[in-house]
Image 1 (tube, helix red, strand yellow):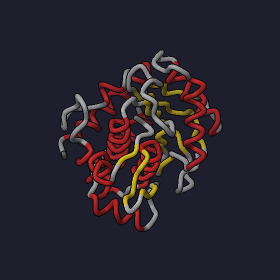
Image 2 (cartoon, helix red, strand yellow):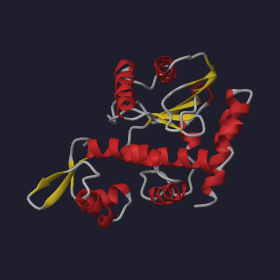
Image 3 (spheres, rainbow, N blue to C red):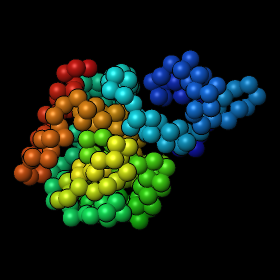
Length: 239
């Protein structure tokens, strides 16, 4: 349940981190929680938003470690099993988005997701992505953004998937380094653990392979999909 409460032991297993690390975050008030007596309790919907932001900001070494840990325990997915062929198809990739502003880029990405016929309520998805962007931009260094809704309702999507758009011109999307963005992923996962692991995998692929450059030079959606699969295979070999 998205609004269920987790103990520190439950949360450690859910996020694949040590209880001691979580206790330190609680002490520093760096993680959303509430106290029940002397016990810290965590609302899962708040944790998912917090964890998504943390993953996007992890330095490379810590991201690699988190990605490796999160590769275990995923339902129906083995540790070395690729995600990209499951989540992408060529019709979920648009190499020529005409977006010119942050708002139009978000709208165009939601339209691309809605065209899959896997989104139950595109208007609600747009609202939740806007809500997430108001918290903190999902644009990262390197000219890419990892859009996703703030909360994850398993009934929002018929199945988990990702769409990818490449804009004709770069857009100022709020990246911390001030650089414009031209590659936009929209991650639509039914399962919270899969969502966090997918964010970690995409970040790892973009940081540790030549994926971003090959996505920019690819001449078709098929070539972009092939680049995604090749980058993922490179990362999986390192697990």
